[in-house]
Length: 132
Image (cartoon, rainbow, N blue to C red; front, side):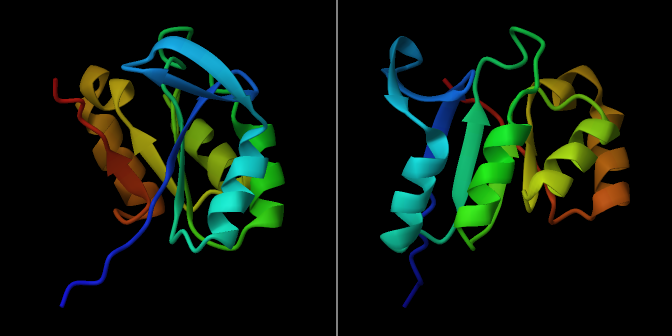
């Protein structure tokens, strides 16, 4: 029998957790760390934070959210959005994330995935492909 893992993905925009349909009509739900803690208490196996518009706005602003969350929950935290450099990955991991998700940067610079995997280990680097 397969084990089932529960991994909530929390969409972030700026400092807030947001909810929308196909990233349209986003509405603010509240503080991301509060929701992550709720899912942790309900038995989630991992939490994914995804700033889905970070590359569009050329930002990477999840460090404070990661810091706060990592102090409150004790399951793997995976973070994506706006990660363009090895320094970005170091900052996110130092803030408390276990893994990072690469999307835009992986397509714009395919060697970045290889370089990041060599630096941090392949289990730390996740490449996300959006299929429509």
